[in-house]
Length: 414
Ligand code: CA
Image (tube, rainbow, N blue to C red; front, side, top):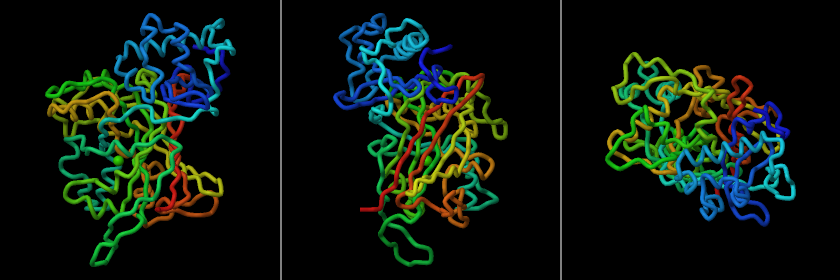
């Protein structure tokens, strides 16, 4: 495929990608767009031009909205169809997308990105064996780092959807109750151990029925696409509160996502095999056929207030032990239903090697090591004024498909 638009070969938003997002700009209220190179395609105007007349009635208002939920709910036949039409137009020499008087393309540096979906429910898994092993070794027992259930269950918890924010929005350092080492009473104040978690989340694209379950075989039909996901974590708050019911205020103050949803079909060529799950074998409902992992390179950088940026971790989505289809099958096996717009995050994705650990907790080994930055400073956890940036992309056979980035600055507690 070759587009007439100038898109550098190393661009995340290639002709093979075409992710969906919600944007606005001066004089243009929030609406749906597709990213290509440094531009965004205005899907509302394209619909007005009759480009999607075989798929959507001209009066069907799915694009001029604050979220993609209504569009996604139309199903993959429609969403993939719209994407295909834009892909064809971007390759067609005489396409009217090229007619500048129609303003169908806008430079992306002129638009503001919003949360792409209204997230109904958010679930966070814990599916990287390396991450679970590291955390278990730090907080429990290095010889029995994995709890007995971990290799049998894609462990997860229900998170908070209200505090999911798009890239670019700053967060405030959370305050809360912690139990300092050797103290006898808990104290209240700003978290001293603010951390990120490098994750990828899937956006649910199809409702499932309450009381029914989704098989690993059918799971992909229920996934619209993926985004980068930074599960902000306050380790000191988390440590004091998590027994016996798990994550709460140490987690629910913010999660940041990349604003462009990469459709699952754009990642097909990046599929790779998963971990060998022979010892132990999962129960039958968690078994699956074929390649269900993805070769997506992931990285985390810290940008300090002097403008210098240091990449502190390089991981890959393929290091997930439990694949997305297993997560969906497990989530629904008891009859729990999925709804369009729900977000299921992977859990921190840590590489086997320490250069690819997916959190400061692991990189600094619970604060026992300094992480050097390019400006000479060091970090154990995230400080006020730091911006955490996550990036991700895959590239196979010259087809690069990336997520852009999720970037969040940390402001002091109020
Ligand atoms: Ca997490």
